[in-house]
Length: 214
Image 1: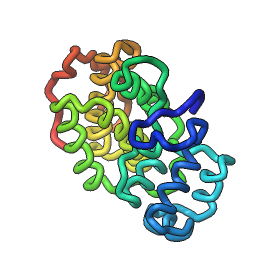
Image 2: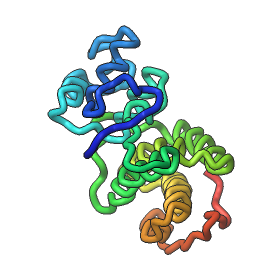
Image 3: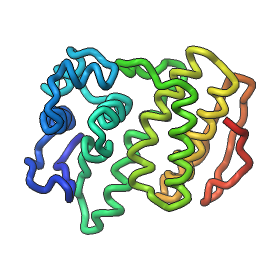
């Protein structure tokens, strides 16, 4: 992440703090060793060490796994960059780069550094995301979406299962709807290929269209 970080809940921290340092701080607050966090997040200790030292970037999926393991919001680990006078809107816009990156995987699966959650687990997460959309909790929705998109992309590429494609379709529609609301119209057109799905969906401002069950 470039520039300074800003988070009202972490105002006491150094603004130059990177994601790996925040992971280390949250880990220590939970009295966890790197080995302990790695076990809870289902990743290798070496990955945790490299991310904490800043030698390897933290992927959205790793951040989500660490957040779950430490029972914190992913936004607390990512930090909230503050570049303007409207803190809330700036926090929402700060989620777009990670969403854009997660949507960019087409021919190559993202390197998660861990096993993706099962489709059943991701289905539960999708229900949570839909509730966040309905309550207009856009910053929280944007913080959670990248990991779900990446993990579903891996599921699709590994299995090509129709259910995985339907779920990826739903996650992409949520991302497109959020992006359109924030003015990123280039992300509002989503294209899916494979798994029996080959279509272009143009979302309305509310992202409303019939979606198949997951």
